Picture 1: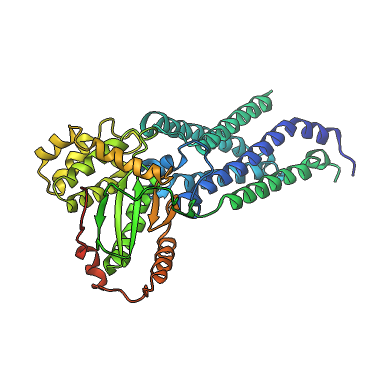
Picture 2: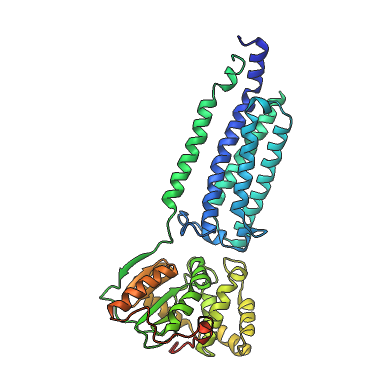
Length: 157
Length: 257
């Protein structure tokens, strides 16, 4: 069966949202592995972090390296896995038009930005040490947030 | 079929991208997943013998001596002191075949409170070598309270440790506020640098340098090889106190001169 004009119009309309969600999903995968790397270090499976002249070990072994007894990086893994699941589901037919998908993505991205901002504040002003991988994670979250915002703006037009 | 074509056109690339990121990340992690950097090499034969005494624990005449150059504000040193060192004390030093000697190596260039912590420990040692070890343990146990910039001036925290371990606090504070141990701390660091110590913790086990720390098993392997080289069976300790009482039975001998 050939595609109808309406189908194609629909495809064109959701195109940017799908692309945006794909980007979010891909970034979430990258963020997940950054968090996995830091978690493996925190749990002692990696003796040294590839951190250049940074202070990844100081930050990760600090009092703020854990939250409720669980490494912050492990929370990050859970966060990115959730983000990936929502974004990945959002590119598929079943969830493509579901109104909850963009809302959830915005909520998750905003929470991620706020938490990353808090962690960056701790690094700069409390711990006085910078973890490069934490910066990478913060940039990933910030990019995800920007993509989600752009998609929402595009979708509303 | 045609309905989904426009939407699915990019899916192949999408899955490829996701898979590519995952594979690249797994490879990168696998390549970086290794034990703590740990290099073994012999002591430079041209280096003069250790002239400055560290803080000695265990049998002064033990056939194997583990010398540690450490920085109180180094996370690796903290991990060693709190995780590995208890085993070293109770399973190696307690046998009488191994002694353990601590040397200051404060990395003042990158650790703001490293020198202060060294002074705190040295001043505790001024009231008895056993008090050095008590302060050593307290400083590492309290790492998260004072290290990495958590305390702009850790004096109050260290003073609290001094009180907790039963030191004469007035005497300790008077010492801490003076430069009494400046020369000793500098000498410890110079001793290390003469032997190529450039990271902490670094161990010199008799004439074997173990840079970048090590696990109990790694240290035990070196110790055993050195004992065997001297014709001593590592499995037959000369003094074997009960396992539980071993740590308490340790009486630090010798010490700072």
